[in-house]
Image (cartoon, rainbow, N blue to C red; front, side, top):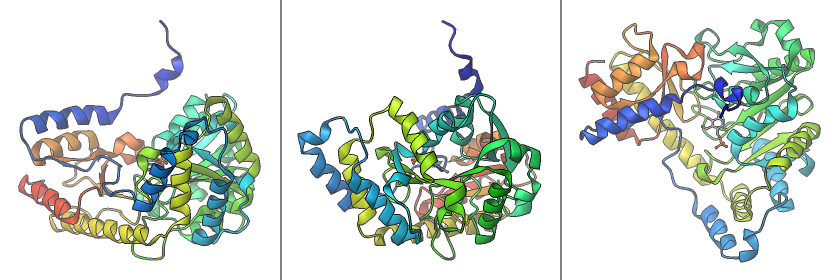
Length: 386
Ligand SMILES: Cc1ncc(COP(=O)(O)O)c(C=O)c1O
């Protein structure tokens, strides 16, 4: 059978190749430090698990969930007000999705006609590109480079491309590069969106994993953001519920309803017990979220201090559960370096080039081990002479 040529737009999964190699080394009895995965090793909070368990015990909750529960939408609105200080979010400005991954993956189908342009960061979280490719759109990139602290620098974006583009994805704190947005950057982006009639799609997956300063926030808290943008808001990382697939699109109601219309053709909605768990997370205490942020910060310190001590350039790591490290010793090929690091030190990381051309020369390391585990990984790298 001749499958859709759409599939030709997607390359082979780099993770699959690295995984094969890792499994082989593990089978040989090698100690492996796997810093390639983006899944938190922390547990979900008890009150969230209980809400899911209680709801799942009721057979009625197993029916098709044809809508987002009004209490769920209200919980999102209230959370935006209390947690982010964003007043004025109403239930028509909220739609659920099965995590941001699925939401961004489908968004292009609601916003783009074939050949329409969308701006995405380079390097970026891969579904930002995939969502445009699935919709037969054209990708345009804007770089996140060391020169501008790995932040969007709209002054460098070609105005003609910006005029042509329908939406621009911005995601701060940024996976994989570890940068965190500043008010000035958001103000520039909002002004740029107005000037070029662009929709800003902000992915806020790491609002609770920001280091060294004020708590993370929301794009929608900045003046004018609600006119030019929408935000994907996910419970995955803040509440350690990555497998439950809980995400929302929040913001401009015309965009949210277009997105919900598209999704309603494909899916029936979030399993009711998961909706109940989401309500428990959004309306419950947030002290564990803060405690966890501090734990991530200790991990960040352990890894970055250790790498710096053994002669690496200090990685960029201001937020997210990742650090973005420049290849040591003048190396330039991130895939070759990942193979070398795995073979010689047993440390598994992700090649920067897999996130886009501007990621070449870097690797992404996930903070998924406690500080002692990360120190042991650094010691293994040092012992291997890397
Ligand atoms: C930037 C970014 N967006 C979205 C996601 C996926 O979020 P979700 O679990 O809500 O699909 C991730 C996961 O690593 C991510 O890094």
